Length: 358
Image: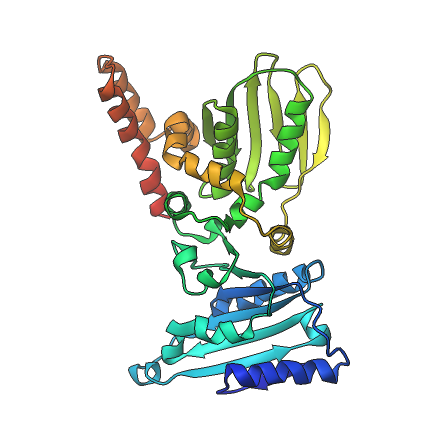
């Protein structure tokens, strides 16, 4: 059942929700949380579709906040709120309200959302695109116990990760981190099968994919070993190789669905490691609403430290500018102490510029 409201208020939207529930014969509210999606018109459909599929596992009231851009200065001075209320089969197992904000009310979205939150239920805010650099300080983010962003949608993922590390607040999370959950589980299970010491690791994936950096930072943080970030044609993450004193452990996924786990001294095994849809990622994030300390620790490890460890693998094919700099680097006399660290930092900077130029 759909109810369209034009130039309305939060009070009228609440009344429409009650009318809709009574009309379909379910006056009771059986939802467990409120999911607020802050997006634009272009991405609203895909985000709402993912939320509707996730609601089968987590019945929720979904509030989609679409901030419309006014065409003229006169339109910006007039505030207007349009709403589309969906209940019953059209809203999955919960309720959906699509809020379209015009004019000055765009800057006060929290005032519209606050009266529509479920009482005594947790709040999750998700930004599919254009997430604020500090989600906890955003007016809508301040209402939530959990704040979900997606660094993959950023123009410069590496710089975005650095900013996220500086502004991290317990409750922040990233779908790029959620995408590596099966990889982390598989690698942890592989290490449980051997009594070996890991000495180094290489994480391979496509360029401008922050999941590769996050997985590499997690390995470096948990194992305290140097981790290199290598480039591949994708899709997404393609391989992880860990060197141990008992032989290499390799998890290779070349086609984006089926991976091969190779452990020294054991036969190769095929494991399912498909690339998951956004609905699966959101459903996983809604299963736990407590702070993710593991994500915080990996994020704070720092992209720059990872770049220093694997800067040789950051450039495709080790060609171009890196090849031209090799003779010059060999001609320089070895330098020790603080000067050596300064040179290392200088070589790590081109990658950030490369990501920013995407």
